[in-house]
Amino acid sequence: MEKRTATLLIAAISIALLGLLGIQVKWVRDTLLLKNAQYNEAIDNALIAVSDRLERAEARHGLARLPAGGPGLDPWPATHPGTLDSLGTSGPLDGADLDELLRGLLTAGMLRDIRERIDPKLLDSLVHEELHLRHIEGGARYAVFTHNGGAVLAGPGVGADTVALLGSMHRVQLFRNDWPQDGAERATWWLHLDVPGQPGVLLRSAWPMLAASLLFLLLIAAVFGYTLRTMFRQKRLGDIKNDLVNNLTHELKTPISTISLACEALTDPGMPKDEGQVQMFTGMIKEETKRLGLLVESVLLSAITDQGGMRLRLSDVDMHALLAEVARNASLQAEKRGGRILFTPGAELAHVHGDRTFLTSIFYNLIDNAVKYCTVSPVVRITTRSDAQALTIEVRDNGIGIPHSEQGKIFDRLYRVPTGNVHNVKGFGLGLSYVKSVVDRHGGTIRVESGTAPGEQGTGSRFIITLPFEHGAQDRHTAVRG
Image (tube, rainbow, N blue to C red; front, side, top):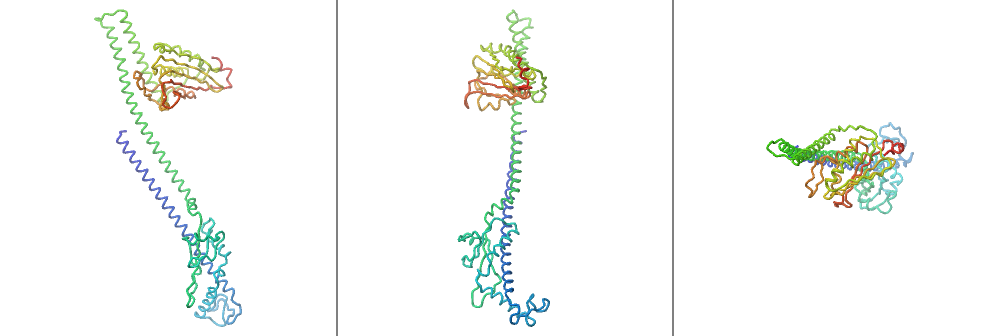
């Protein structure tokens, strides 16, 4: 993917994600505002219902106190024209008489003190009942105030602290149908109510929606992040592979040219050839052929790892014998630079179930790296130890070491640690990736230790490989054969 295309794609996805986030935030905000408005409306409706029921209760109480056979009042049939429910008069009532009767009843109630007009238990019952009908819980606090803010009745738990209630936005006028008295200012009373914890109630009611929205946003962000990471990783791998092809082309041309020149020299009849020259040319051909073989092997290792084509031929492998053979054969490479390879077996259990060919190749890779990345005479020490579950093999060198910042990447394919001033090291970054693949296929682990503190380098490296036994402690006697 071209850089410009990738940039445009990232920008488009980022804008879409931010837009979606903005829409989601606005939607959640609007939903909470709507729920808050509905909640407040439900409280106000409950207050209006309480006021109406109080007024009806007072009217019923006033009618119940009328004498059944008082002056001018006699029972009349409920269906008689001009009757008032079960109450009658000595004759039919016209509209004026009814109006006067009702005015007299209500005026009589108005003249009573507000504390007598309101039964505290009834008010408390009505408040909680109306709120419960509208699914509003949470210990409501209420009080009755005069028009000038004086508290005349407070609900349970309010006490003398009525300042907060006086400022509540939820209030309703009580006895709204009182007639004003002639020549006197009409008295008004207000019921104020407060429901503590309203924001928490709203959040709890909206919690499933908020949680789902947050979950989906996090999922989208995670997928977006993973996509970006994959894109950058693929781009990086593409760049590395291009470098690999260029480097491989260069590396292949050099030995081919050298072999070609040596062959021409050997076959040129005009060039004098003594025994020393012939050995020199044949030695050149041998070394360059070996170099070509290593290059081809690197490419094959890459292909095997890529395609998952590693097929293990499992058998019982004596790791002590295998490591002794590897150390003996690789010693020539170290001795050319004045170094040595030391193998010290220390494991009681030395047999594992694995593929001998692949296991051999990983230790050749580790030793080859240890020798190449060393600025002094290389010394490689191989030791083993075991417990009831696994065999542990440690390969320690005295090379340039690996910085702490690079240790997490050395097992990645095509990755090569920057070598500073060491410019004579050739390779493609495939060896350690191959080593880890083989160890993983055998159910083992590999880790590296280099330096004693972050940033420290030059103290060598330790590669610790752990290979599990097939039968563990149960096969202890069978496994001790090395």
